[in-house]
Length: 406
Image (cartoon, rainbow, N blue to C red):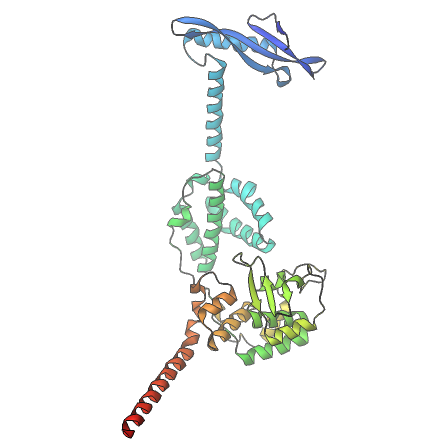
């Protein structure tokens, strides 16, 4: 056990660390002895302060003892080190909370949200978020402390967007960004209320694409693509014959392709589920004719063997040359690459496949996402009813024959 040594300062003593040094001397641990009142009596109390390597000296220790003694005399302030530590802890916590309460939306965006966003989202998404923030969000709420951002502020952002003629989809996207920032701030304890966007009524958005290709249009598109870009043609055929999203095509590796069984395994899809897609005969033939890479290699790599980030401009140029979008102003009716997936689903429904089966093939989470195709099944339903009527009529004829024989 280390020996205690008194100092020239009353009530202050120290012991030395057996090995650790502070400068040329051994590290010293200081304590102070002082009196505290317990009921009607004064009793001696000794408490440790800290090491000289932490900045303590005999003189500083004596000053602390004198401070506690003075507080006891006047009956104000902490009278023990424990009380002083509790007060300091409370003051630090109040300062921390006060600092948190005054963190502005801009500061949290710059220091926390956007750096995290860049690590977890695509570069194109981050670029879009940065533009929306700089142009629409920051001017209204950038300098406001997070906890004071209100639905009124969000209404102002919405009004600015509407006045500028921005679409309902853009307004929805920007409010979603604000909600994501808020949820992250709530996770970090900076706010504890619901997002201010929740009380703001947003314009209704119907951005569901309605256009699908006829089989004749699809054949012309594929034929033209094949003569311009073999890879773009193959990706288009894959989407038309299996309903894959562009991102799912980009992520497809040869290890996910099972030609013998005619299956494609889709991992980390849009809804975070792994699902299976099924090959048509044409799709199987196309994949068989391609040069197969290693299991971890992409089926459709870029020129450096890396993952493709977007569909080639060849696709839209071909659509334009074929005049598939001629005279069409409504974006939902225009042919884009996603229209191939939409066409796949539409063809299935028109051929009599149930909406539930289409839902599973497309990887939709809910049937409501697939119900946009329900109108295409009307002819199928009518044919079913007509078939029922034919059976009823056949049954009646057979009954009449039996009665006539009797």
